[in-house]
Length: 139
Image (tube, rainbow, N blue to C red; front, side, top):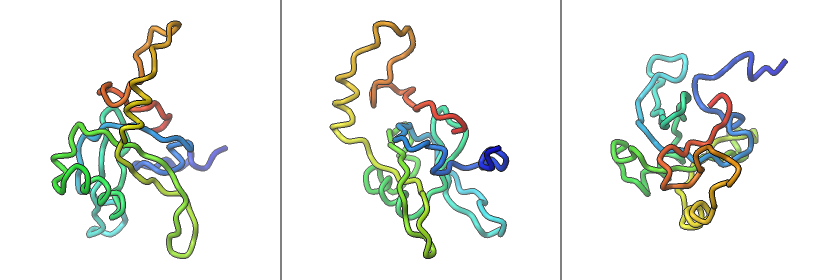
């Protein structure tokens, strides 16, 4: 029995990424009550085709706003890559989600991919494929 399955989270966690970089398209950012305290609200970023949102911390919000602008309304329909990394938090090392902006190398790699001649499914081109959200179970 996996305890992570016994206590599912409403929000995206590092373990949900399964060690992969996940390409997503931002949809909207909303302020939500995240903790037990009524005044414990944080921005939560949601993605097209995904159920779980990412609770934004200062680091991730800064990366996104530095590239796409300070107003989260401007983030709509923009690509983003999510990945997990180990960070130090309150004296402990633990996994966390970080974000990065797709680079020219990411775009070149996706453009160079040829459609699978055996598959009849959609290609995973990035960023031209606006339905590119990687399929990660539980996300």
